[in-house]
Length: 315
Image (cartoon, rainbow, N blue to C red; front, side, top):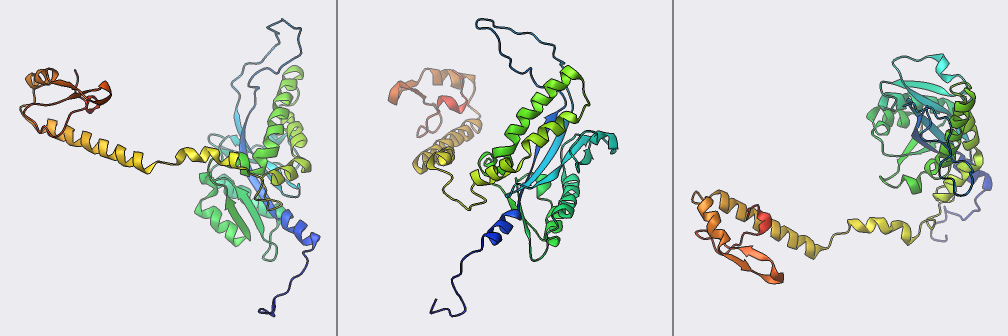
């Protein structure tokens, strides 16, 4: 510090750290169906293979639900994307307080609906120039549009996208919230099919059970975001990435083989005398090469190249 008199070493206040965590959010979508996928398991006698129950086998409707939570366990009211042309207040009957409804043609989120949710997010969180907000999300195309990026920049929101195929490890909602929510949601649908209660109340029951501060805090901790912990992942977690490594020698060998096959094709296609009689002559000149694999020599062509079976010549 003697070289830099303007700098000093100070202790970080726990309040500042807590405030920083409160400004870190994760947003993600998941699809839900209005009908149960399969009957739930029940306790039965040993040796009894089948247990029957009444089950409504409906195709159901796909609805996209959008969750958002902070590293301190604060949840923003959810959003539901319905496959409709116009909004209808009755769609939100029985949903958690503050839930907003969005509509698209297929029930999937798009750029316009995500931008509309971003406006709802700003009104709920109210970021400022002195207290900016970090929003973590995946790389879906609806999240990376110019309209969304401009809106985030104008409203003091810093967007951070997660690399592809890593959300099961890096996204807090996937790690600690969507698992319990899916279980509670299926149980609620199963109970609804027995009692025929209000159609949307099972979503509220499942959401209120899964969207709890403990799950959100646990998700941010397991992903190493809240504590800035880079040691949450071991070498085993990175093993799947090894399959993308390519041996340079094998790569060069494959390129050489492909070049040889391509040259042979060009030579065969450019020779007008290569007809059925030539094919019969090739069959009479099969030679056994290395590893007892036959190679096919051609007469009247360039003998410096051999025509391999995979080059497209039928026996």
